[in-house]
Image (cartoon, rainbow, N blue to C red):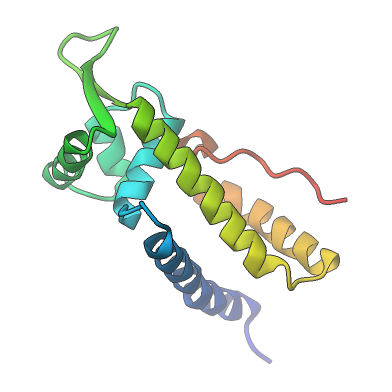
Length: 158
């Protein structure tokens, strides 16, 4: 008999990258959207965490400060992100989305959700309930603070 823990971990390691690959491909197909996944994650983080600094972003992305800074520099050049002085600490710079950055991230999130919904339509309501419950079980294990990702708790399916 297979060990349930090992079976589960193998399945997660197998499917999670496949889901991200499908989203990457869909993001590339979306017209007018040249965002990479790290750029998407950056914009989403800044959208979700007002007054976040570069260190917060680097920690979230798992990047060094210089790498995160280079990533933000590119988004600043595209007029999607601003570096601003903190209202509470003059020595600290915080990140903020510009109106075009805000519009873009909301559009990309909506499109990604639509794409995922189209993929998941083939599941029955009972199967969707299982997937939702599984995500709810995984959330507290993997998401230290749901504010970090901008995720909101998902309501129960009817």
